[in-house]
Length: 162
Image (cartoon, rainbow, N blue to C red; front, top):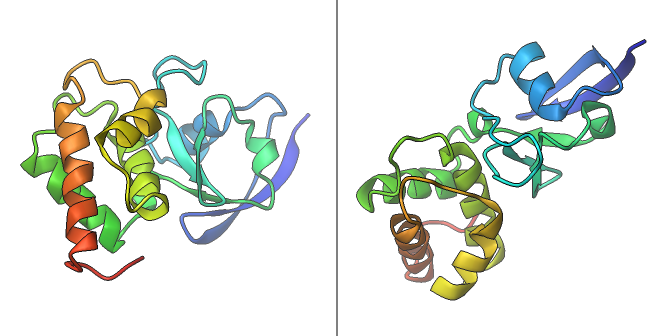
């Protein structure tokens, strides 16, 4: 048995038939071919599968695809020319916040949420917000510095607010 779903995926309306037990992560990777959504723990703990659902970060490995019927889903592939994401990508590179890259799509989605939702966040708040995204390579210092860099640039008016 399959269920019909229609969702807005990276700005485009997409319809599909999904198994009731199919996770959003599996649907994105296997049906939609969006392999930027990484699977780590498959228990919602590591954050590698983080995507935006209706503008909020969510773990796609523990979200059923059928539960996303009628919702807007944004994956790492869907950020295109988003100015905040462009700043974050540049800052992640400058601050050496990338190593193996496995956690990066989920980290960037969470970082985008921090920058747009918490413009006055300090290092402690950034670390709290990142608590659901695990990285085994960087030690988080570069990630926190990258987010702080973007927040400082935005406070200084270096980029249009998104």
